Length: 333
Image (cartoon, rainbow, N blue to C red; front, side, top):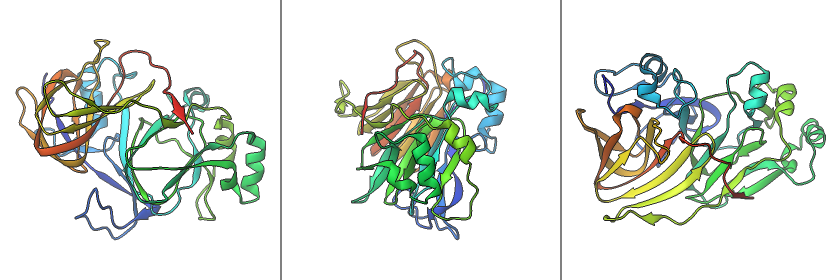
């Protein structure tokens, strides 16, 4: 395993005009003088907060350790494959779009940005805008932007705690206020802002409209009910399985051993993000890592097997790159 071990990540708080000063219930004891919209957990510049590698970034570690860190399933051995973050929308985000892989390559980017949103908390009435309404063309959407009525062209969906939304590259989208989201995405921050409610920020209409796809697989993911893990009181829910990521939810009261390899036999770094409770992550030859609500731990692919030991109870998302080629998930609007 070399010098790698489970890495507790230091959140990187990113100011946004649509954010909030109060990041409860995820970070209830943090005070901010400016509005925070995002807490980045596994970005290239995010730093390790424990052990001998403290202060090093994921980009530095990916370049140094390559497959030992990111695993066999990752597309690029030198780049950490997934970006996870919390989103805290207090006002509407801009109406935006991310390119898919094909469109990203046309503008010199290595890959696009397909993502998914797990709704960790939602107030009554929380909504998202996802995709163009049936029958709305890209040309009609462009006209709506120019006439300052872009929102009328979007599908608006009510969201509830526990929902998982798949957002394929090329999907026009926005978040309304009232929810806390855990976003799992390709490691890219390419965003084309199409409409911003009059905020004084740059728009990217030419690039953005070129990236918009009329038909996408986006929507609320249709998924089975959580399943009891044999021999324990723990439950596991398959939230989404998609070409770029697999995300599961675990609800644990008993210790559970997990693996960095999936059924294909290929390995991937695993990202654990705690959304409730507290626990300890244990791996052979490594110091235990305490993880609490709001924390993220990266399990290097070379670790192979690790144990999560709840302190009373813990709920966390586990994200990784699939070893097999997967289709886009079944969704509904």
